[in-house]
Image (cartoon, rainbow, N blue to C red):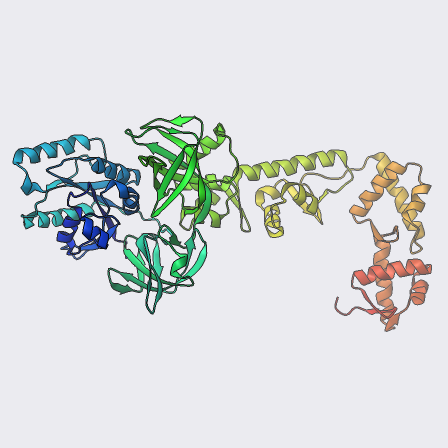
Length: 622
């Protein structure tokens, strides 16, 4: 089931927007007592239009008075099609222009012009206003749009309007992306026996009874207890529909107009975006205080302009807006930028990023990053966010939809290590760094098998979890260059090659340990015996790393072959005995007591034997 199309009704005060809706829907969208008294729409009015085909659309009546322009911004946010109402007697008025500009800011692509009060003017005046509209909107999304005369005395004009709306809505291609649920709250109240109720127009996604969602910017979890749309109870509701949610887990006093009900949002006080100023606006200077209207929320902040000191009317520029309090946002949210005082509309903003770090206004690389986010398609936008270290979950939260990385992974533009996503450039940088480090290590340590795996992680992949690090080491591109040797990492083509002196020293060390057999002498003793201490230390370390000799304890080593022989001897001993004591081990190995104890401890560690109150038994759990 697709979402409802949202029609926005906009125009100058007293040009007849609410009357048109009443004729189309039978609903008077002036619902507030103050609106009835003044005869103008102050807040946003909502209703549903049923078309002859059986299809329906949501229709939004936004306020026309300039004092309530922020409410108008809330109404136009999420509109698919604009009905711009212009009275024949007045023609195009200041709020007509401002409403049109705000619709343009919010990315409305299609619309229709309704010339109301046709019965109150002459044919000449009607043609004059019609020509005025054709000229004024010739370079906009309303260029070539239908222009219909509307008269309260001619009901046929409303029937014709309804037919034309149905034709026009068939031309709208709704976005196919499956976005997360989001609704900007415009009203909050307490219903007796039900609790907190919030209303709004669903901007994206679908909501179902018993869904768990959050209120932003509070980031407070709530549960959906009931759903209504135009006084009808619903089990679920999709984007484009007017919606009332009965929610649990929160009191009405904790929610206000301007809050957002959503699956997940980014909450930030620092937003980065692209602003486009109206041609009639004043220029925006660096550090200027502004009002920002996104959805139903108005926020106050100061503008930091990147790359320039000001933005001139009709031009665009990249900015950071440092807000006085946090708001919930998604990528490509659109808003209206207004001067703080006097309150005038400056232009629009498209949110591209959020950042709490200090960035120089002259940082060309950061400007290029924002420019890429503003121009490129989804795949490249996701790639840029991966470069910034975003996880897949965080990217999905910021973009407001579940993101697949399949294409980028197949193209090797990003890499996935367990749950960590790394961009290709970062992967190549890490791999090159590890490779260069190992190359230098091998040059300076020709007899070392490699660098401890834990040291490489600490130096180059500190932010990786152990699982992510293991996944990195298992990557085919990594394994083409680097291999794991026990707990050491080495270049794949590295082999230890002993020179003549090193080979002689290896034989010398072998002879020391061969002669001692099971009567162990400390390492320091042999160090005193050799004529080349430096070479002894280097070759001895190599022999230990390669497993020729095994370290036991107390600075003593044993040839690996003799250790294996001790295992065979003790296993043979246990064929006829149940336990073995230290004194028995001394006899078995023909060794001194201390050496027998050290070898038994090593056999315990290897789970060959098990120590029971000073005697050993064969470990059956091997």
